[in-house]
Amino acid sequence: MSPRDLKIPGERHPEKAHRADNAQPKKPDWIRVKAPTSAGYRQTRDILRENRLVTVCEEAGCPNVGECWSQGHATMMIMGEICTRGCTFCNVATGRPDTLDVFEPGRVAHAVETLGLNHVVITSVDRDDLEDGGAEHFAQTIRAIRHRAPATTIEILTPDFLKCPPAALETVVEAKPDVFNHNLETVPGLYPEVRPGARYFHSLRLLQKVKELDPSMFTKSGIMVGLGEDRQGVLQVMDDMRSADVDFLTIGQYLQPTPKHHRVDRFVTPDEFMAYEKAAYGKGFLMVSATPLTRSSYHAGDDFARLRDARLARLGRA
Image 1 (cartoon, one colour):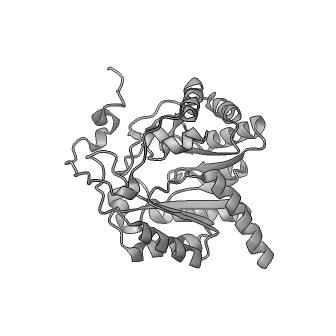
Image 2: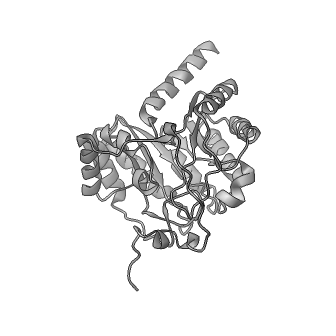
Image 3: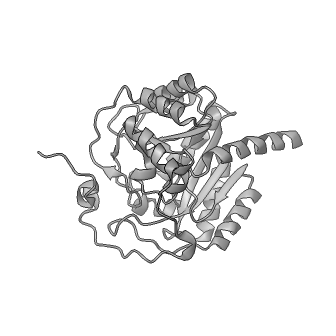
């Protein structure tokens, strides 16, 4: 059998090939971004290629890749480029992943050191094929970065560990990342359609358990808008996150990767994003990023510094 060509949409997303095409509406002016061309972008790309690393920036088709890579920022995606889930919003390839690469944590740490990162974001595909969901691999990657680049702060964006024993989450938290991020992605009513392999209240409970295991660890979660949710649903998700003591909320516009993906219901205006941000701060989040181009890792380093300052300011007022 010939290997899959992940550049071909039908082979990248075999689970979506049978779906009817959804029209891709024209993007409004506030969504447009320039194609990446800078020397910094090329340097970051080359370092990642040399270390044979996958990034979610490329795999998910992030619109901010030019800006972030030009500044030497990239979100590393560990455990391969093939996910065991088939979420209808996501452009990461679906299928049976390869075995874990035991040398990957070291290569990630080497790239972090070479890029001179102050803050790094590590994410992964879902690995439902592994008993621990890849928790130990996350922990090894965190430890390798601490060894090679001890001054770098580490943010992880994890899967939900839905089919794993509780020890999986404990393994990741014990490795002490600076920020634990797990995205709820959308309102609970859209889960069967948008995130069919996941469970909303399991993901919410995961974030809550992180705080129970380590109250000092920053937690973060995000959702996309423009999938078909309404304002009241978004406000309810904010309340749910605060009940789980989530510190940092991100909200960004959903952009449809291909005609086979979930349709864009509408483009949320910048004014609506500003209103969401104001509401979220009113509900007690330490940090909020809510703009059309916000993504989980966008400006993550600067935001981490602000997050730390916000906690210190709040403790000073307590």
